[in-house]
Length: 244
Ligand SMILES: [Zn+2]
Image 1 (cartoon, rainbow, N blue to C red):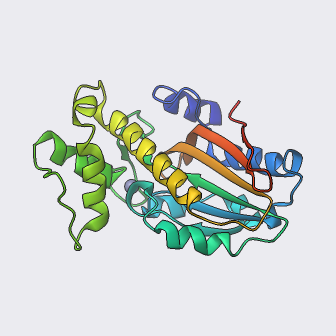
Image 2: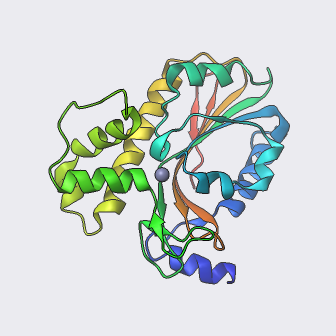
């Protein structure tokens, strides 16, 4: 399938999405052209879902960066916390940058079904994000108890609690899973900002790249729709929005 045909499917739900490969190429141009750095001087971390599809569809050119350090657990929430954030902040070259790509993910099949993808070797589609779908199913059936977070399923329970706080917004949406994904993005973004505020960096820049990450079938690949591209100059503290 041609790229324009793949994009036409994804654009039905995410009109500004581009392929992850194009996103990485643009980001490398940005690092070289705007930040005046080599990718090898950028410590790259991501906070995306631990779903195997994200490893299978990981863009090859990301290997030009240092990393990735993995912040994310289920649906991309930064479960590695302050300790994780502090760890890669201390691994970055002195004159380099830290860059964090983060966000929840959602599947869209090549036939346009949202919340599912076709995975290699399987006859049927499966859920994507499975954790978000599971939490949404519990929300819709009144099965989430406020404050119920267990050791045995800590990450899933955390996702459930995030959705629980926006129950009306999600339930009244035309596509509840899509709205739930936006709710989870907002929770991830808020937590990333909190973690950044509590971390000391010894390099030139911090780059925050927030997005909705969109997976499609194995033979279609992945996409993203940017929500934030902020660069913080760590010497001056000045933050610049480069989203446009
Ligand atoms: Zn997932």
